Image (tube, rainbow, N blue to C red; front, top):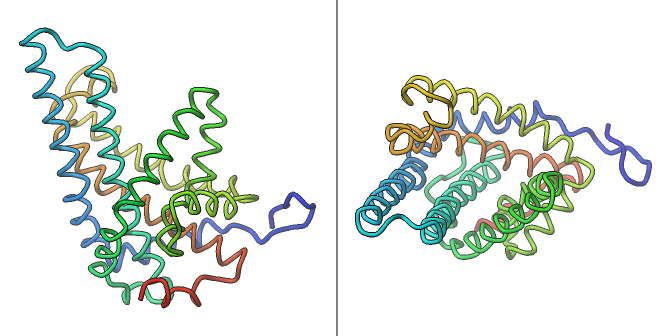
Length: 264
């Protein structure tokens, strides 16, 4: 049990239950989700990095790279990558939420159709998330981390409840209130092993030098990181969606009564 702001005790956020629910979805639909993620995230990441490298090479040959235009080109491509990642997060969220009673019964194809129909609000929410966390990190690291934890469930909430981007951010903030320590623990348990895998792959494929230099190597940027990113994003998104289901179950008794209406 966790203490709330009123001094009462709230039900405990069970990380093991969250992980088990996410793993059930991944066992049932992991191959389809990862293959789709490879197309949505992997291919676009690889293509954007190749384009960035080609453009910068052309600029260098012409009149020098130039900090300003390089900065904005990098930011635009980074935002495009984030939006692609958000689409996958939304897709996995729909599959997890619709399959919470029976993971094998979820329909990834229908879920993907719903995601593309809501692509515009997903993109808007991604932009707001990025700007908010950047400002939070610029002011101090702690506000940025708090925003990240408070807004972590915005995409699952938006998809499950047909919310606008702002409504979804507020909904996530309310859901995580009193449980952000549990969400942070989930981040550690779920993300740290994925980062270890990334470090090991950098050692294998990145060539000699520091870790940063290895990550910047052509083989890592153009194919290893996009492939690994596509896989790890599915795993991470499943964890976030499962955490959303867990918190709605704890605070409101579950989302099952709304599922048929929302995803009909």
